[in-house]
Length: 149
Image (cartoon, rainbow, N blue to C red; front, side, top):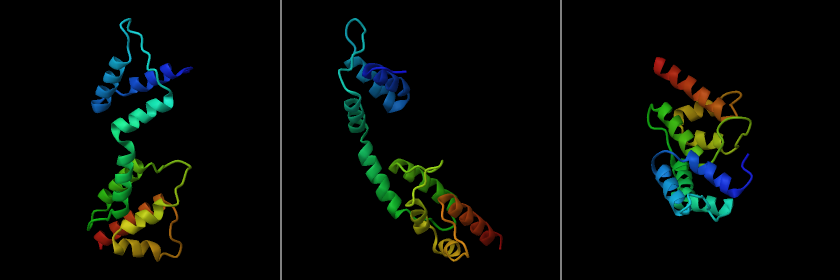
């Protein structure tokens, strides 16, 4: 569909249409469009990706998210916010959270940050869940039964 780097880069720029990304794309287009309004980025796709990474500091954001994920803890009675925060940080790190791809690091990382009571309930089951979804489902179930009692 996009046979050359110019068309590929142009397509990527067309998707950058909100906020800081839109301003960055507009500036990039201004810098790489000649007087005849012809777009010529003079870059390989790899160079373009590296420029985006450098401009948006993606690697540093991932490193920060990895650190935050390692120290994330569930606050008292706040399971849903913990789940939201965990999923957001895991996505920033680059972990795939759904689909057929499973990351073996996610279930233990999630359990580590759970409240000790929920973690114990989940681990001490006859057959503890092995997937992140299973752990989250059980945590919700146990928290709900705890508050009902």
